[in-house]
Length: 338
Image (cartoon, rainbow, N blue to C red; front, side, top):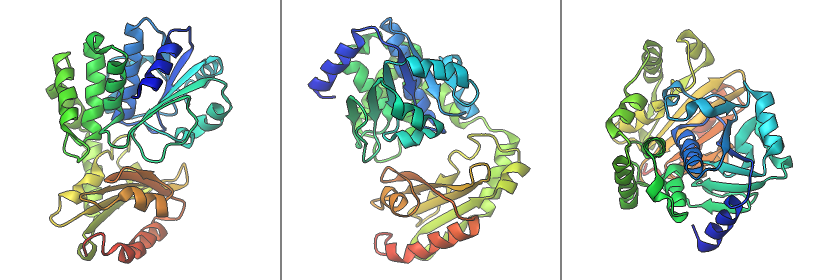
């Protein structure tokens, strides 16, 4: 953070505030971890805050310290609206466009509160009074650590705070294997472990606890995989019927897209997941090397994210969506190394 923004934050936090912390819709480990990490930090400073999530999130994140204090806008609408109406400072974490909050978007657009943004995605909008944006960062949790350090708070990092921040960094770096993982990332992780984050336990809780339904669903996804060797690409599909057959729960398909990248020679992996309730095909893109899935998602599937990890959506049927996807690949032949 630059000194001017640090001074603004100090000034904001020196005054009484009604603070609400908000992640993006369908929050992941980095979103929940960063929100809880900030909540714990503010609490240690004697500052009351509340977390409002747009909708539900995976069960494998609900063990995190402070989870019981999170309010779900879809399920606890009245309580959330009361907090949002009274908010004087809204902290938005792990997203940089209000459209990423789903049903919360019109409420946030009308809010008279001041906004603080902490995020590492590309092309941030300008709604915040203080914007801490850095696309080179591994995760928003790493940025929250820097935020805490800039406010001279590293000495008060608790075990709970460290656990939440470690979780977000671990999940958003793919267990520290993505190119965004730097020596600084590892230095921060080491400090979080020193503060009490149990790295082995966190990994086990996030990655090594499966339900029979999830493993059956993974089998279906792998069976559906299409390998396009000429374009170093692999994609898979999951229909709503397949999700329903195996009692899909939010978070069950987490990480499925990465299996394509484990194949020799594959540089681009995609998963298309049908969501009939929203009337869309939800798409996750992953790549290795310098092929930008962020640019691909923004250009063709109303999405975006990072160079090697992005999301998108389609309002067409599964058949038309995958047909469109395959038709796009020839124009990317050179960048895919075909």
